[in-house]
Image (cartoon, rainbow, N blue to C red; front, top):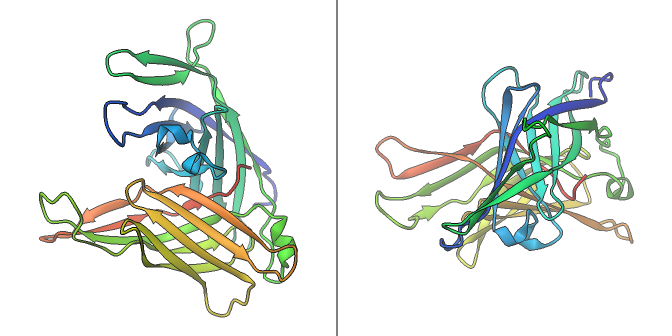
Length: 297
């Protein structure tokens, strides 16, 4: 970190939840929030998942993190901003990473949360519903803000398995690349490389290169992440990517040879930008850096 600031504040300028459309098969619930440093939004956060999951992957123990995209207004001082919502408890979690002012060029991480006090209204015609923040007693829009606190600095390269097991595990994903071929008018893809990307541990600065190695059930991409050369470690990592839901699951495992062996799992809704090549049916998908958390912090 920069050695002085230990907490930050983001204003939640707006937030909204839209239920899935029961008349459409495969329809997803959508949660969206605008974050700013005052009344003007700087980051737009959007996530989608099957409604029954309520923000947790397959309704289980892994919360779904999603990227908040800088809208180009003002100065976005963060490298990444991510959010996750536990819709059952109506809690929104926020994390952001930023360049530190130390000589090592390291990145800092800060996390926080807010309880969403929402009013929900049903739209009778189609069975959908939506929720927005409750108005104040005077009918005004409430002023909502999230305070985040800086996380401990990353462990050094000599850190042990036990040290890592006590640290909050998260990653910064960079250089996302995926290419698929889709002829005009086609309903299905002709080919798909699956994703490749760099993965940097925020807990100990391990850096992995991740490449798709195959598919499961012809739909879910699977891949392995290899530590960059020169790094000796007891850790391995792998990933799964569901292109229908745009969900990426990272699993990092530490083989410690004793009771401190453990794994960390992070799930992220990846909103890549896909551009069609000139005179081509090939789309190339890329993304700005994305932070992926594990359990809620």
